Amino acid sequence: MAVTVSIPTILRSHTGGEKTVAASGNTLAEVIDDLEASHGGLKARLVKEGSLHRFVNVYVNDEDVRFSGGLDAKVADGDTVTILPAVAGG
Amino acid sequence: MAHARRDHPDEACGVIAGPEGSDRAERFVPMVNAARSPTFYEFDSADLLKLYREMEANGEVPVVIYHSHTATEAYPSRTDINLAAEPDAHYVLVSTRDPHDHELRSYRIVDGQVTQEPVEVVESYDQPRAV
Image (cartoon, rainbow over the protein chains, first blue to last red):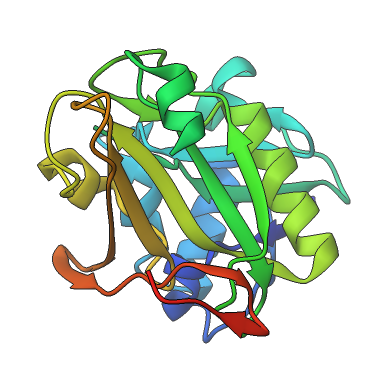
């Protein structure tokens, strides 16, 4: 399944400055592995000990994957995966 | 500052968006603090997506990301520094610890390094006014 991944400013150093990149996979985990293969270093910024980082939000289309299975969230052909670091602090 | 006073004792937060590359803070967008906490703030995840889609459609970036501290000074906390993820943004902090004294400062937070920067208040970008 081919998807478009929207990359936030802070991670664009991994994509040569590109705001969106293409990737493929049937689940978010597969998409991230595919991203890692073409843009090394991205996975470590998104995944920690087998789960998504608490302060990285990932959406498949309009849905926050936290509510749809996390890394197991399904992706379909033509979907858009959006990565947004949380805007948070203390 | 008014937003921060209104939400006190919880932390208030939001952005001021501006055209990409302009470094001009033009569009004030108060956000809901999903954490509703006096010691933590976080944009609601659905609101965050909506905000970034809207900015993308407008050719905007978050020029300013602001939040308040309710009991401590307007200086980035360790959590603020660890979670800062917009290296091009001006992180504006206000403190509402004193009900009368306005405390507002601006910082860049890049790779864990905090740099304070001067703030100039303007009515509009055509007519600068001294603070």
